[in-house]
Image (cartoon, rainbow, N blue to C red; front, side):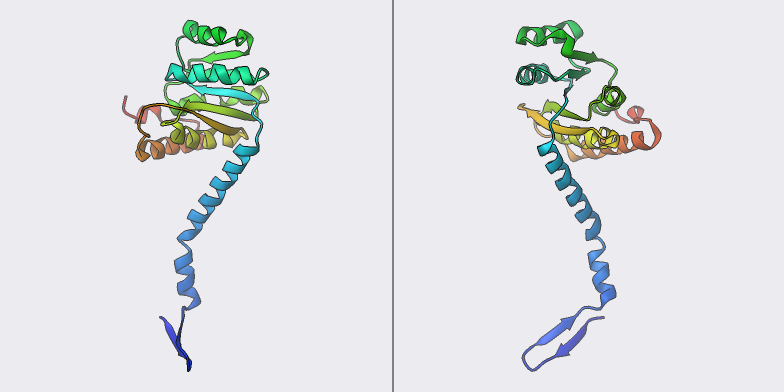
Length: 197
């Protein structure tokens, strides 16, 4: 019900408090999400990463990570399911990166498991922040997964996108893998058998 109050100059509409609350209620989750995203952006901006974390899939990412590693000579490099071991090692060696900094892991089967298979290992090494290296068209999905999986263990990500020629991934993939990450958080299962090969 809308109350109208007439004054000599104009008509004033007064919205009853209950109806006003109903209009504001749907905005609360959006406001919360916006504040969380803003906080994560600021956190990512100010963090000083302790490792380089590369999502396998394209050798361009490994070449890019090798160049980044030269600029940060004290950071260990973790590559999750990247190029075959001999080839990946050659990429980093040729760039001048010492092999004792390089950690290659081949347990992941997809983007969600890139994070879930290594989160405990990184945490056990005392790593609380990483540069996240992946292609620009893959970064949105990787960030959502990373914020859930790594974020749940207190690991902050600082994304650096590698230029690619691919078009951005569809929203459905981001939502699906965000859901799989939440499933992992709640049950320890990644739901990898739920996706199409």
